[in-house]
Amino acid sequence: MRVHTKETQASLTPEKALQILKEGNNRFVNNLKANRNLLEQAGYTADGQFPFAVILSCIDSRTSAELIFDQGLGDVFSVRIAGNIINEDILGSMEFACKVAGSKIIVVLGHTKCGAIKGACDHVEMGNLTALLSKIQPAVHDEKSEKENRNSKNGAFVEKVSTINVKRTVQGILQRSPILKEMIQNKEIGIVGGIHDITDGQVTFFETE
Image 1 (spheres, rainbow, N blue to C red):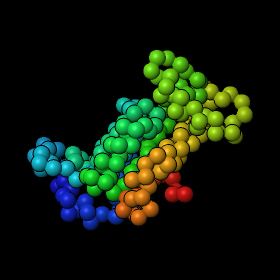
Image 2: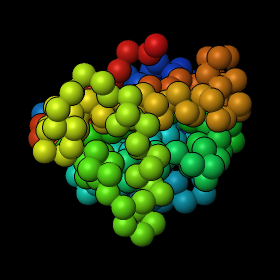
Image 3: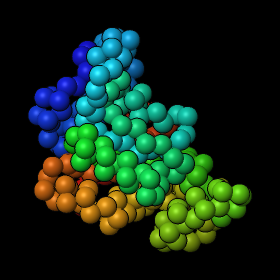
Image 4: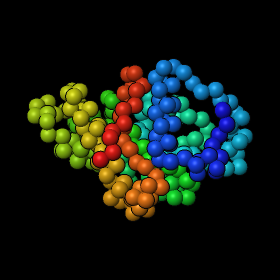
């Protein structure tokens, strides 16, 4: 399986880019993999890269974007941080990926049983982690349906906060990056949120609002 070229990347629409990710996740869930020679791909991408997607996901060891979407070298920009939150550096990386390097879609990917979400639900404070988890606290506050046991022992509460956190991150990208917002409005790129179920590997994408 060859890598993306400037021509194949440019020919993709945001919708087609999302479809490629969905098809890759379907292969992963069914324990199938596209036939690719990674060493050969390393050679093809040595002089340039043309990834079609930028994926913001958690650092969790079970959520590697390249694996769960069955992608090879040079296919996606992978941005990973606990709790799939954003900051200026991540926004700048996304702007580079889309405006400069030509990626067609941004995916904000949360996952089930997320440790960072659990930490925020429990109001954990520890060193530099305190500031990171504070960025997830608005999602904890926004979850209103669970009236009791609003902590990590309540699995339903944790998953609802995870979903809200992903949606807030999507909105945060639109609010904090005029460059990306304009590209989305012009349909040059797309943006979508989703949740990866670490038990069965399935990624569920949210409908674009």
